[in-house]
Length: 303
Ligand SMILES: [Zn+2]
Ligand SMILES: [Zn+2]
Image (cartoon, rainbow, N blue to C red):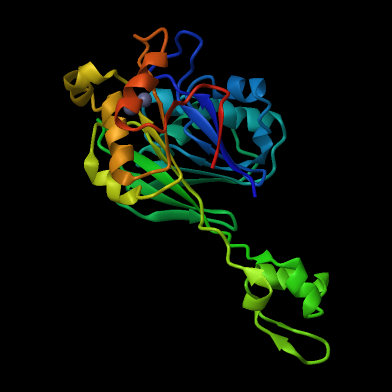
């Protein structure tokens, strides 16, 4: 089952050096979920051929412009493209006012249902779940209410052992039942425990998005052993003081969070525009956590 993250934008604050403000698309089995929607997100979607009509949920980390100023444009494009499918947008308090004021001032009538969910960014809570993923908020330490999001796979598919199925005379019509981990009863009345015919599902995969935030080890407990962590690293390792004053993190701080949480892989982004080339930031992060990678635009991370 596909579970991947495409980086659309990973620059901080403003577009610079060919980089764009924050946005990512999570693709789970061709269901798309948008995380943050900075200026230029639509252009990046077109460039990377993202089928934006497939997005049904948008998760906004906070109301700083580099994470949300692309949203009004995206909503109006949906209207122009004749969208009829409902759309849900999640984000901290103020999200509703931001969307309603923008749309009202532009005299825009929504032809589809737009659900706006304001969440308490100071709480850890599951805010969404469907057949694919559950989404839990992670309180972050930033200048305004900000939350990260933990995306966890919910589907558990048991793997069928074809040889065992054949041996017990279980044909393909029972496969969907077995994949759900349910026992089967054959037409002759024989009852077979699914454990004889399947092997257990692999552990559920997970991805967390943590931007923007000052270094805050209290989030580690929510990130334990996840597969992929996106953590902002706005500044290089020497700029700890400036990072903390601005409620941002350095490369070393992002890597320390990854190391403490024992995540499998770290990707860093939200790069300061002061850096024309960001390659050295990856090297810095690897001084602390070897499985560190730049979140470069257009890059897909498989989870
Ligand atoms: Zn930002
Ligand atoms: Zn911010």
